[in-house]
Every structure is written in C-alpha cells, then in structure tokens.
Image: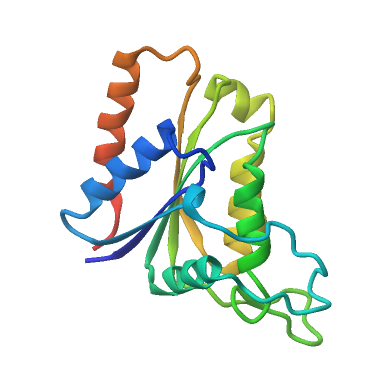
Length: 192
C-alpha cells in the first residue's frame, strides 16, 4: 500500500481537473492510503517576497501541504495548462513551499544541491485546450519540462508518467466521460 497525495492544481472551485482529481483519489483509495489537496481551497501569499534572503512565515495551508508531501510516497498533480504553463497559484505553491532545507539543501563547494524529497514518485495529469500533440511537439511541452526538471526532479521526486487530455473546450460529454474512465484506471500503475 502506497501513500498517495492527489493535488488538484486548478484554482477554480469547479473544473474538469477537480472531477479528475476526485476520480483518481476514489480509484486509488481501493488499494492505497490517499490524501487530496485542492489548491482552490488553499489560502496563502503567492509571492516569495524576499526570495531566500529572508524567511517568510508559512501559512497553515502551506504547512499542511509540506506535511502531506513528507507523508506521501506518490504525488499526483492534476493541472490545466494556462498560457502554456501552470496556473499562477500552483507556481506560487511551489515557490512558497519547496524551500531550502525542506525540498533541497545547498552544499558548499557543490554545484548541485542535495535533493531532500528523494524516494517519492510523481504522476502528472494535464488538461489543455490545445491538441496534446501540438502542445508537446510544437509549443514545447513547457509544463512537463518545468515540473519534471526544475521543480520535482530538482527536489528528488521522480516522475513516472504524464497523461494529457485535450482539447477540453471542444470535448463532448461522451469524450469527457471516457477521460474520467481512463483516470479511474491510472492508479493501477502505482507501485504497492
């Protein structure tokens, strides 16, 4: 049994991402211990005002998020693509919570920091209004590269898979139902 953290990264209260996160959490809970975080319900200052020069106190929702990350074995991020990348609130969540001595640690004399969240895996579920093949091969797949390389990977979290759904705007109810069925099958890939 793995400890699975499902993050709905859409800042809207009612969205396809919310439905995907709910379905994933429900399906995963058959064989795993699951916690779910909805970024829309979180309250925190988005900006890391002084960078790392000055400690900025963490709001309760950010402390809870960090505790949930430490608890987890597998992290599922369900996010829309907005302007080619992640919503600002998700970026703010990373800026404010993936801090030195929590997610990574600088070591004097070394060019690469120590990765403090090693041993965890991740899975990305991405919705977009662009056809996925166009986004990946023409627009550069920015969100996956940023999450995998410069945020999750930088902290030691190894991405196991990325699944794309789109275009959302023109998707019929039948198409969306099929996507939900697919989401319900994804937790089968989680290691026990």
